[in-house]
Amino acid sequence: MAFKKGNQLRKGVTPWNKGLTKNRDNRIKKQAGRMEGSNNPNWKGNSIKSLSSLHSWIARYKSKPLFCEKCNKKKPYDLANISGEYKRDVNDYKWICRSCHMNEDGRMIELVKNAEIFRDKIMKRTEKKRKLAKSLRDEGFSYRSISEKIGYRGRSSVYGLLSKNGDVGIIKSLLAP
Ligand SMILES: [Zn+2]
Image (cartoon, rainbow, N blue to C red; front, top):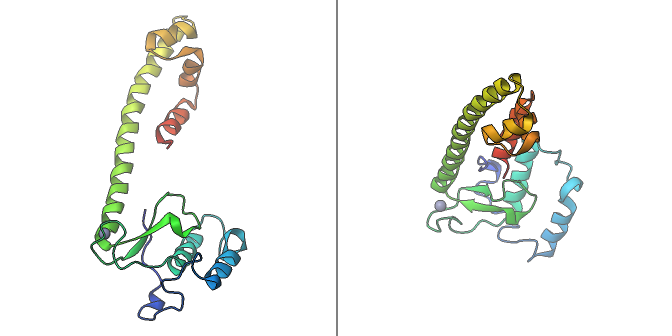
């Protein structure tokens, strides 16, 4: 996911640290060290406010290249996070152009949509199996034989299926990276 454009105030003004990184300039290094992690007064966990302060911080310390770091063709427009973890690390971001920015957002929406469709399919299938497992249980079958009949691995997965929160584990395992 990419950040919204920020730092309008600095538009048109060349900052003293333009093009410098903490690996190349001692002033930057000092400043970066001082502002890292919990030392940064603006850094308060994972809120929107702290994300936007993180964005300004990255925009300040990550030098802007001449061209988009993705297509290498157009002018960079905004910062995109690479890991999805929003690390306080300039190497976890790249400057990308407006169209690459929109593509990244579109891709993210597509990914979420696909995950939802996939999850719904699994949920439907799971619901069918749950009904079957319930009726088998009511008929007096053991959990082990139910698991064999519905194609599950072992008794514990049938316990999970028939428990109230059976879906939570399934969804978690689907959405896990
Ligand atoms: Zn681009």
